[in-house]
Image (cartoon, rainbow over all chains, first blue to last red; front, side, top):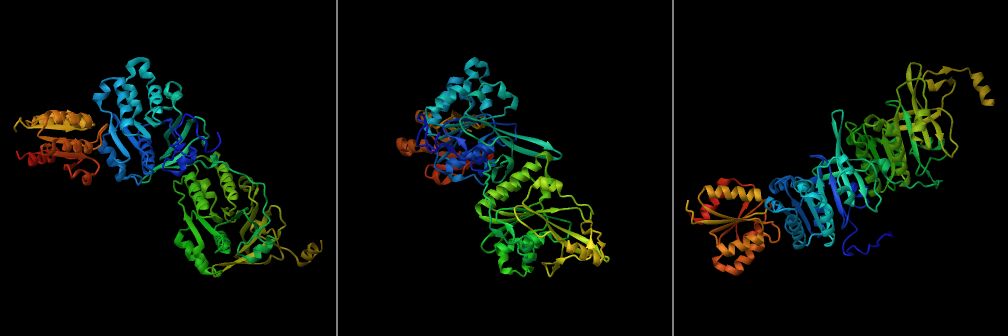
Length: 496
Length: 119
């Protein structure tokens, strides 16, 4: 259906979707809960069904829509309100105005299915409900199970009647996944949202997944969610996000903030490209990243995503750079803890900053922190590639810092090149010369460009990187234990 | 307690309405119960109770609308009203009666009733 077109049978005065109050959930659900349709929210106790339903209700009430929250057996209104007040979406002033909490009391239920259906319809009509939530629908259905086909088809009857009032219906139930194949309401529902959790080690991970959404695309699979004082926050699975790959190759060069390194790269890296800076601990990778971010300021907003150093530590190092401490204020710092890190939460936070703060340069320090935190190692390659593609899609020039084992002697780029598939690889490592550790730097790869092939000396002086001449009279530098070569043989190779 | 005192309880949460009704009966009051504002208005008109304990958010007619209609119809003969709600809506209810913030203890409820009815 073309965008903006309204199906004939739907009220044109209502939106096509109702936002859920959470940007991640809206993204997964292609805008939110489908309007004038029936959505089932299912999941075990404690999965967050009531929180999600309340959040959707308050988001709609906030925009002036009338919401009726019908309860039966699940929780008293007093307790429900006590809990709801803990969430930032709760707005006391909307209660009674746009948000009505009503009980389908047992005396109504005891009168049977017809009386209960009439009660629900009367409530919806008298409150001029745009959204009607029943918590819990399954409880209601179980009550009428003995009433034969009428009980089994309760949802069909309810949905048909409410659709005549143009009401958007949200039904909650503690269904199990297997019930989808058995219970008729799953065929009737226009959308089904499942909330679930699983245990990994000592962690309980919560998920939201859309099982069905009639006539609309949605983000497939499981998406991590958290419940906090904000309510439900969903972090769409990074790999599930639609990517718009571009074939356009930028010819614009971007400075890394170290003139000698820019020269090694024939003028810098390409705008919108991704570079891997690999090396051992203490070699100066983070510092290189800070030079790169500062080189873009103040015109290009830079973001440092740090799993290691705190914001205070990084600010101090930025202040030491001779490029001009006044530029440091243009650098955003996002400090993430790798302890019990939720991959998609980190990716979502990065994405939000990139999109909303117009980030043009980014450093991720270190990219292997994602690998160490991943519960599912089999997804890490796709996750990182998807993250890199997202950055490229937003024309962000990126440096991914990768920590390699210290002084290993035998370095292999095959795995990391395959894994990250970056445009450029810069390798920094320590070399032992005369019982002293000397830093070296080399450009291993630069896609679509010539680059300096030499291994150059590198130093850090007063918190700033300087790059010197290539090592002379030495070979096997990459092993970390170089061998002194004769001057004659060096001249010989120079002639060649 | 005198059982010539009749109290009308109006609350859509029947578990709460019934619990309060039982407690008041134990105290010797005659009790009427309605589970929505519309029925509450009907009982108030027909029985003119000594006191009305009413929830605010209810189906079909909320507590405030019920109070407004009662005042319009009965004027100064309107029974004293005590609103009970988990939402702080004292600003709206103060024109019609007292307010009890849910949850409350039976001790608080009895004290409120005794003050109003002067028993």
